[in-house]
Amino acid sequence: MAKLEYIWLDGYKPTQSLRSKTKIEKDFSGKLEDCPNWSFDGSSTEQAPGGSSDCILKPVFICPDPQRKDGFLVMCEVLDSTGAAHESNGRALIMDDDNDFWFGFEQEYFLWDPKTNKPLGFPEGGYPGPQGPYYCSVGANNAFGRDIVEEHLDVCLEAGLNVEGINAEVAAGQWEFQIFSKGAKDAGDQIWVARYLLERIGESYGVAINWHCKPLGQLDWNGSGMHANFSNTTLRTAASEATFKAICESFRPAVAECIAVYGADNDQRLTGKHETAAITDYSYGVSDRGASIRIPLYSVQKGWSGYLEDRRPNSAADPYKVAAVIIKTVKSAKL
Ligand code: ADP
Ligand code: MN
Ligand code: MN
Ligand code: MN
Image 1 (cartoon, rainbow, N blue to C red):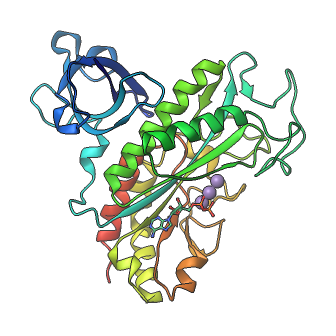
Image 2: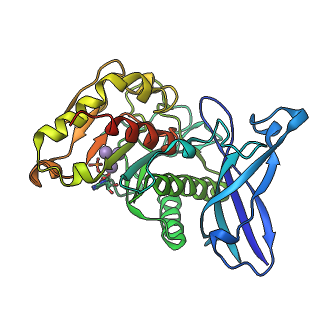
């Protein structure tokens, strides 16, 4: 008996959350094409009215579930009762059938103690020392929750997710993982499955995951981003500063459209401080971590070929919707 965990995104606004339920299948092959469509009560997830509550789960990605006997994780798109993409389905917005676009997302998050309502490492009723020693730190004074982070990394790798790295971040209790894929939909699928695994591992430690982009408010603590590193054939083979600039310029008229899907409350994070550009500005620059879009030194050193980093998407953004708007914008560039 195989246990298939069907995972989907609910319809809550402005931030969608993970939902899942288990389907038992006999003689399961382990293949995506052998995962049947399923349904759920959309009236319990803000996705349908009670009188007509069925929504459809369409499996789109599968991997082994390393923590569950005979388990698989099955990421699903949500369809409405007519079989059309549900309005909450950001994956359906990605227009890149030949997977020309590659994405590397840097997912930041806080490990959060539900008892103190503070990050791990924050003493009850107070604050730890100011930012400085926590980034890429080691030692019990500065690194908090490594056992969770390590377990998550092992489980992601065992599931076959393409994690490229992890690091402790600038705030106490804040961490990051990076996932890369040669395909926008696949990158989004992997980020969501990795988020699911992190949430579930957190359960066993009594630690929550805080995806909010500025959970400590306007105190002097970094917020959490989900930088989107992206390329297409044009960028990867440009050999041209003008091409990079034209693609960067294509984002200028799209600021509002981008910010609309770059995550809730981003005005709290994109202040112009803490390695961010102000939400009202648009800028780009080589190696510039205070810009909206950074041109990595790597791309310049490769003779203006490579990738770009949009630093504005935040930790709670939907990677599907982020990828969809980036692809649309890059395709609009006047080359
Ligand atoms: P930093 O913290 O300096 O911004 P990271 O190493 O955390 O950088 O993340 C850089 C990301 O860029 C990685 O996830 C990597 O996979 C991604 N990346 C590298 N090359 C490309 C490319 N050609 N297209 C898309 N993403 C890329
Ligand atoms: Mn990073
Ligand atoms: Mn980071
Ligand atoms: Mn980055």
